[in-house]
Length: 65
Image (cartoon, rainbow, N blue to C red):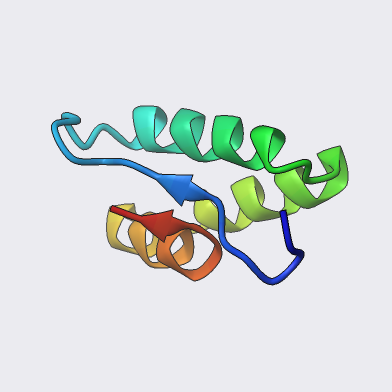
């Protein structure tokens, strides 16, 4: 995958639980070949605020559908 492409994360039909979203994003990042340090950095950023912040950061790094 191109470094500038965002891994795709499908949230359609999911319950919207924050932990589920984190897990789906982590799985997509691993599949895209992200380094463990980059994954940790993004996961930490996603968890550094409230639920709306989590979604905002998710859309920053992932192609959320």
